[in-house]
Every structure is written in structure tokens, then in C-alpha cells.
Length: 495
Ligand code: NAI
Ligand code: MG
Image 1 (cartoon, rainbow, N blue to C red):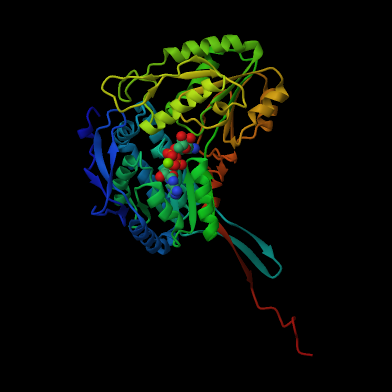
Image 2: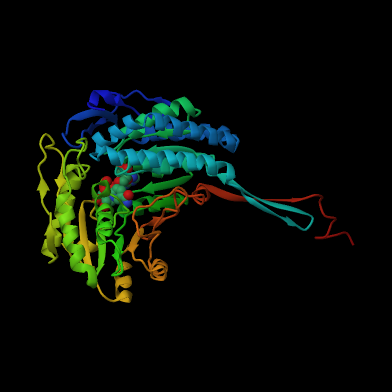
């Protein structure tokens, strides 16, 4: 896809309700090319009225949708997977332009999204309740969908986020109202063109807009029976409070500050350093899973640091769509400033800047904030090692004592993921056991194989996505007990 005209975008997008884009007669906001700042579309800034219409559509669609056979829901999810696969290049290009990530990455996002639709197509059929005989009859525990699910997603990996939310919810028989992020709504809105051809009206509805408007209206709507959110821990708390107010279940995927641990017995330093770079720079560093605290054992510290700095300085920083780019721009000027601010905090608190730390100008991309891959030598207690930065910034922490390192690795409020590199199996297993993280990757990073539970410990979230268990989050259990006949009077029998 060479130009924006080839992306097949509309000039304006309204809310997607009952399989149709609604006419836009209220306020709109701009979708910008994140590198050039050029306006590429305008999007309805939905509020309570659009959210209400979407929830009503989803509520109306729910009884028929929940009554469909799981096989039918599965077949439709497979159709969606095939449609996204056929349109993958265009959808990935839209994300690249919209959020500034290179095509290689947004293409991978779509591969993950497709595998999600397929995974939950299979899981829909095999998601069973359970049962057991009871005296004089049988108990059946049925898994029943909640109804309308209100879902809110962030901007960093829009295709994965939409699939993570939509696939399990509808596989389990729920209907959906989803709010995409104001920085990254386009690929989700374009996904609607496929949804409209495949699903009954009202099963999946999309309300674009701002968090405090469309998002808040969705979380407060009395017709929403289950809330699911991915984003900052700060907003996660707001969503959780909204759920508490109405006593509806809330699942949360929040931030991270994940440790990536190098032991002295690694065999191939270059390979490990390459992994550490990937863990830092994937998504231009804007990933909740990023391995942003690199714990390096004293015995290999200098060798690792030398190669790491050299590797980071080799990284080609450039426009998202330039073929040789490895690192491109952050999603927005605000995010760029946030990250630069953290770099300033790191310097001020005495962390040693080993490389990077500056904004880079890229020709023709004046709007984009490109930040050089940045490595600090830091202490675990520093703010740059404690807080989620969401940019290409790595804190390297030297360690010697295993117990102390584990304490520091766990010494953050988050617990999303962890990586470790060693050739000793027992060491790997014991360390994995002691790490407080929802995912632990041994001798690699970012491995999200279909079916691996993805969720956070501590303040990184509540619930697991991407796996069979996710369907439990989108259903409640109902016990139905059967006695084959009414027992003879026993409670207050006649004398
Ligand atoms: P955010 O948490 O504000 O945005 C995520 C989603 O929540 C968006 O769709 C937004 O519209 C919505 N939202 C915001 N306020 C809301 C409210 N009051 N009610 C309902 N929905 C609301 O994240 P933001 O501001 O874009 O990024 C700030 C920082 O958050 C990042 O620098 C990063 O540290 C973290 N973040 C973490 C993500 C993750 O996947 N863990 C994803 C995005 C951001
Ligand atoms: Mg925000």
C-alpha cells in the first residue's frame, strides 16, 4: 500500500450499530497520520446517546445470539478470521499509518488477531459446563453468557486488542459494545465492514470516542452486564469502580514493568542481547509486556552492556512505512512528551545514560515523535525502573545475589510478564516459580502462543485472556438440578 488513498478509508465514520455505520451529525475528531500529522479521516465523537443506542442493539440481539448453536458461532468466527486474513495487508497498513508502527509489526498483530478468532472458534464448541449424579437425579452446571459486554481497548496493538475482546465474548454467546481508542480507531472501524457481512445485526457494535465520554457512558450503562478493559492501571481503577458501583464483573489487563533476567551461564550473548532489544523496542516500546528492566549478572555485565549499547545504536530509526525501519514514532506527541519527561526524570535521579535519550528528526515526519533507543544503568528503586514509560527506554540493573535479584524483580507494583535466560533447567524452573508474573518466558521473550493464559498478577490486572479459561470470564455458572420424581412428603408429613 503506497498511499493513503489506497487504504480504502471513508472520509468520516459514525458509530457502528446494528451492522451499519450511523450518520454523523454530532461532533467528530480527527484520525491523524501519526508521522506527518495529516488528517486521514474524521470519526464520530460518540457520547451517551450513541452508547445507549449501541447497548440497546446489543441487548436486542442477545436472546437470538445466545440461542445459536456453538457450532454456528464457531463457523462465523472462522469466516471473520478468513475475511481479516484476506484483507490483512490493507488493515495492517491502516494501523501503520494511524499509530506509526512498521508494517512488519502491524502484520504480526493481524496474524495474532486471526489466530484469536480461530482459537475461540474452536473453544466455542469445546467450552462445556459439568455435571454429576446426585441422589435421585442429576446436577448440571451450565455456562451461560452474561448478555451485553462493554469493552474498552487501548491504541498500541489495536488489531490484537479488538480480537482479544470480541472473540471470546461472542464465542461464549454474549453480544458486544466496544470502544476503540481515540488514537487508533480506524482498523477496528474497517473491521466492521467484514463484521456486517458475517454476523447478525447487533452482535458486535463499535462506539468510537473519548474515554471520559463514550468510555464513561459505556461503563455506567445499566444495560451492560460485564466490563472488560485494557489500558493504563490508572483508568483500570476507574473502570473497576464503575463495575463496583453496579456490581458487574470486570476483567482488566493493565500496565507492566517486566523484568528480563540474564544469568551468567548464557551460551550466546549476542542472541540474548537481541532478545533484550526486542523485549524493549517491540511496539516502539509501547507494550504492556515490554521487558523494561534488564537484570544482568555481574559476571557478564560488561559484555552484555557493550553489545547492548552497540546494538541499540545500530537500530534504524525512521518512518513506519520505510522498508528498513526498525524503530518508528510513538503514537502521539503527548506520548512522545511523556517519554521524554521520563528520560529527564532518569537523568535527574542519577541513572547513568548509556545511549539514546534524545528525540530524532525524521524527514517528512514532523508530527512524529521518534526517540532514539535509550539505555540507562539504573537502580530498581528509581522511578524509571518502577513506572511504566511506554517508549523505547530500558533500565539495566546489575545483580550478583540470586535472592536479592528475585526480590528486586518482584519489587514493583506490576506483575505482567518476565523473561529469563539460562542454560540450567533447574535454575530456570525455580526462578520462574518465584517470579510474580502472569507470563514467564524462558530463553525467549513475548511468546504468546494461542491458548497461553495472558493476564497480570498484582496491579497488572484481573483475569486471563487468550486461553480457554477466558470463556469462563465471559460466562456465569448456573446449577440446574433434576430429580426424576418429587419425593414423598418428608418435610411436614401428615401424622
Ligand atoms: P488510557 O488507559 O487512558 O486509555 C486506554 C483506553 O481507556 C482508551 O480507549 C481510552 O479512551 C479509555 N479511557 C480513558 N479514560 C477513561 C474513562 N474515564 N472511562 C472509560 N474509558 C476511559 O491510556 P493512555 O492515556 O492512552 O496512555 C497513558 C499510559 O497508559 C501509557 O503511557 C501507558 O503507560 C499506559 N497504557 C498501557 C496500556 C497497556 O496495554 N497496558 C495501553 C495503553 C496505555
Ligand atoms: Mg488517556
